[in-house]
Image 1: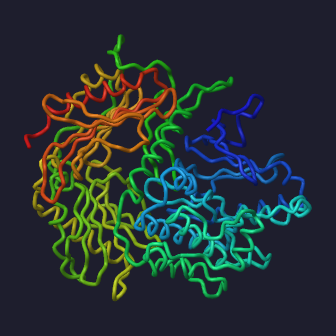
Image 2: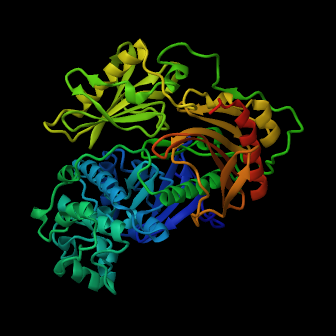
Image 3: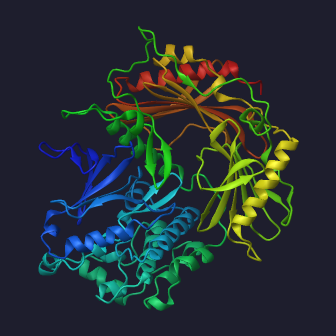
Length: 621
């Protein structure tokens, strides 16, 4: 991201501008903040397009239709003005790299990640096509990767620009030649099948690192798209089975997005679908955004309302927590010299309710659902995390039971379930039914049902039935987990006074899910209790440095990264209790700084000191 240039406007419409994100063939993208605190990608279309007599009307029409597009895998249009001197539109900001940036930085994605990418792209196209749009420019730069899946951006805008007399006179080709469909390259009318061809080309890029049609020049790429067949021999078989039919030259022979989801079959539910290097790249991008938002404004005028804007980066309707400060420079790890305001805390006396956080932490989720009425006996297949277990039904359907995981509550209000407010999130590929944890409305008890089963079951019916049985069994008293750390409240492991002595004034203490706690300081301190593989020293070149540190006789592993001169993070991870099958219970302490003068060594020293303070409160292994 780059700072705004001298003389550039500080505001477009209702959106206060913070930085320049990038520039493409259609316009310039800026990071903006709405009056309600949401971050937005504000695209100002190049002034040249505004001279075309028909452009503004096409732009207005396409934006209106684009507003009808919704879904988990698109960045929704928030606002637009086709009549402004420089037309613009604002869409939900996604703090993640593009697919092209990801492949360039980390290399091709493994087959499992490409299948999740395919499912997300197909689901996005279902929503786009349902609104009556054809994307027309589905390329690696228009697919962003967020922590929980891909996001498709700029849908409908390519069509608004088409027809410009300026473009016709200059001979510019609209779209990206290596990812166009043959009919688009030939100038024929486009149907939704054109986007499916582009999807197939994207899958090849993701799996191999190169486009299947890229030539030495744009015309050569167009020729390849129309006349040559791609070499798919080196694609993983599970990726080729999906990509190859999408790349049929005849549009009528390509699958629809819904059929692509059927080709993919059941995908195991995952919270983080990408390889670790990709998630690290996403975290870096989020830290960059956090640093921009946290900086003091350089223009005259009111300060940005960070209470609203700095708490979240909104990505396709999903709120991703970001570490931000009040915008004041000079946060240090030294004790505060003045009395800090009392922190806002979510901790309280133990809650005896079986659906409250204290009881739910200690439940063995893979023992909660031995069966569901109408479905039959369930088989627990995957139970890595404290907060989830994935079951398989006799019909081959996947049911993911998640209690107090890192995903915030969502869905549409759908009445009640056993006296609790019920939410249903019906989406392509599955359906989630959830109810809130008692006293924690931001945390849910939920079941996600996949849509792939034989005979096909209605996923929302399956999810609701499984959730009903879950609530019943939890209230009756479910088996306790054998894990040592699972029942522990992470917010109770270190007192506020200790955190304040190490990191400065604490303004808020807030749990995330049931196994993670955040202390808002001059940045953020996070303590997470996890089940996973035993930690080792990272060899990932993404980090500035890695190593070990002694925590009073226990070896911990740290990673350190400086995102920009004022922001960075240091993680400290150690194994608390070994488990069978090469797993362990681990503790992770993260110190993220923002708009801070702390050095890298000081940041890691603060993380180490918090880790040492956490250890005495942990139960014996």
